[in-house]
Image (cartoon, rainbow, N blue to C red; front, side):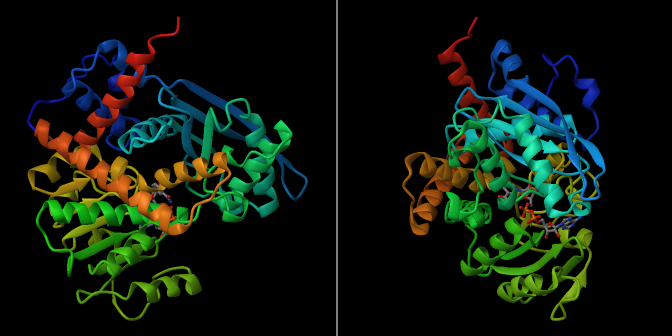
Length: 432
Ligand code: NAD
């Protein structure tokens, strides 16, 4: 990136969001910079930074004990210029309106980067699912769905799973919505069980997308795929699938971690065995066949590719100078703080940004929505081939934008996305 510093020219409330970890700041600082490089019209800038709709609801529910409690739920629709809003629902104690707003905007850019006809949304309920029974979770899900029902619908707002929500919960959302509108509407959510209109290949889609863009990055940097040393943080849906598929491509996964810690073997780990181990024992901590390391050590290991696929804000100003990977593939949302970006760039690290790297999930969610609406379901090979085509094309478009403007891929991705959303706003005009 050139050294032009992002000027808060248009944004009046920048000072409120100074903390490096603030997710809204992380998003807005990149957005501001990209908007400036695009010479975005100030009017469109104002439209794009304001979420279209923010809903706060009370979610009363009855505990199994009979006691009544009231939780807070949010749903933010950031922008629907390009199509229905798309974005997950998370159940977590850390959910805040600021976070949901940032994540909703991220979804707008992510859908535009892969050029699928969706806008961005996000939702959440402030709760600790580990303290809730299945029956309590179901009551919360159904009441939250009923509370935001006016926004939902295949043509307006389509949720999906996110932190601590899964296909079981999506089935309850779909059922609640369908009971309200008096007929079955499976296209109202994605990430559903395959038996009720989910898509084959959805579960693996995000990890598969990470593998595809990493392979493309290696090709671009003229690095061999065979023997490339990979380190993966997070061994859940995204991390474990990315590790397996990268191994299948001939890469050597030398370290992986989960919240119990990391394991390392410079000769390469046996990923299939680790998946079995986690299936049986839940965590990697007691796996015997490798050296144990901390998550902090894992991030700074000598390797070619680092895949942060667990949490946000793990690569910061503090540890960025020690990162030795040549490529970072952001499987998680927001794993790199804005402060770390510049350090990584100075050190020549090639970062495949989250809004491109983990967009495989929303791409196959789009396929699910298309299949539900068409009532015609594709085989897994078709899903994977179409995903491959979109990820490769998107990587080339982002890399092309970045190269034309002599910027890094992150700003290139934001520019591509903002340009696409702004173009639709210009064409549609302002409804008065
Ligand atoms: P998951 O719950 O399946 O897995 C998360 C993994 O991270 C687990 O292995 C967990 O043990 C590990 N983890 C948790 N805390 C950790 C810590 N402090 N240090 C190291 N590891 C830790 O979640 P997931 O679906 O794989 O999602 C991971 C990330 O990818 C999230 O940021 C999510 O928003 C993002 N993402 C997921 C998808 C998807 O389709 N699942 C799509 C886009 C983005």
